[in-house]
Length: 262
Image (cartoon, rainbow, N blue to C red; front, side):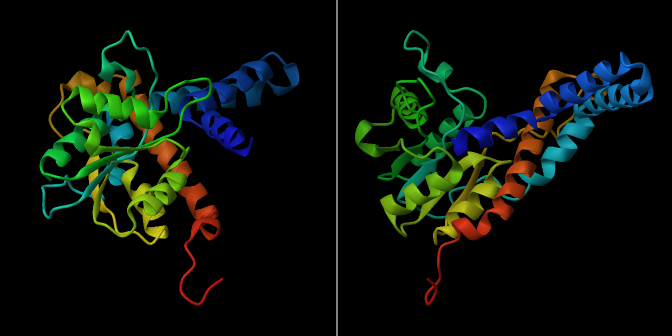
């Protein structure tokens, strides 16, 4: 129940729902003679906020500091495990395998496979529980996609119980102990994920995937016109900022006891 409440509350605090709530409240007040001024202010805030967060310079300006923590992994040292964290997915057996990995998941899996190929004999570990009413887990779907791209079944381990990054870190710690491993997840999520794994006493090697903030040249109109693509970038940055605040708030509950502590 707490997990669902956390997800619902977090979802309502995302830019689009939050700005729609602000604008809707403003519209309601606009029809109340006593609160028209306050209604106009809220509608203006909602509209202007939506505009700003839908512009590329603003959206990628928010996202870039999160993504620039760790460079792309260039095979600096051999590893025994490549851990790919779960993300968005669905399951339709009639679709092409990769189509079942949505949002951030497919780039994570493809980067994980690239790194696995650079480390002969390594194992791939996919994490992620099943969504509600879904017969397949995130880990299982990612594993199926990896198999369809040439990764043999005996090179894959699935951890399909964890429902969030904290639980994923605990499950990986129980599975591989202190063995060296690459931690593959979205570049914007990696700083927070690294902290969860370090709290388990592990020393993951950061391997970012799915970089989104664009530094290369764009057409002038792409920078100037609002777009749902840039809004999604703002949403990712917002999500990670909220996640980091929650992580800091609950840090005492997830930290691994040090020697001499109870």
